[in-house]
Length: 271
Ligand code: ADP
Ligand code: MG
Image (cartoon, rainbow, N blue to C red):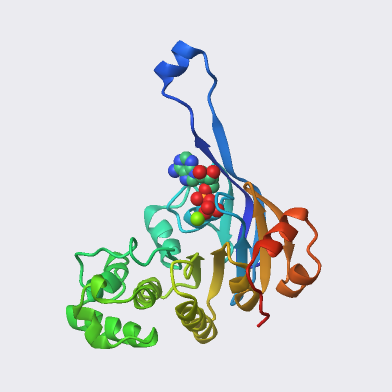
């Protein structure tokens, strides 16, 4: 079995008006199926990219993958373990969550502005009880900062003292701090300048190689996936409509929706 498997993954949002309004107006419930019976699998140490327009359900899948959101149906399986198994004990759930971390789109919104960078990065280490003692935690934070191309002295600074690209490096250090095997990257470079984007992507690639990380890489930017992905899944209105290797997708797109995405991408250069 593949390292990560999504099986019939489905998520509904209830967009209904309040019950009282519905009772008075006789209007029915409105349910949006944001993610609709999605299946994919990711081999260990590879990158699976999910592409689709805004609103296609990408972030909803990311949130389900890291446990921020429960599927309405279906499940995610990592290393043979069902992440949504209701029978899992709290400590088993926590142990699985440690192994799958997330890097968010906005390096501005995702870092607590009132915390020092060292505390931001150390938080998962403490939450999962990975390293005891302030000194040892400090050493680990220094090591993580250096791994993402920052200085250990940056631990004392606050997020606002960094550029967007550096903040995303901090987010990556934080995601790495629990020594995960899977990282979900939700548009990790779309808030960054193009020149900085490439540096962050190169860092992610280098880390993947070093730690055999498995990536679920989410983007609306096809130029990004051409250099990152081993396999690409195309999401349209919550449904996975096509899945191919990057070369296959760019040379022989099967769906009109995929062709439309390719045509609207500004420039694609193959890696
Ligand atoms: P993407 O990341 O591809 O832009 P999302 O997963 O954020 O897509 O959203 C998919 C659909 O679900 C959109 O139509 C969005 O409006 C809707 N949606 C997302 N989050 C919520 C929510 N908390 N409540 C209601 N609808 C939501
Ligand atoms: Mg999104």
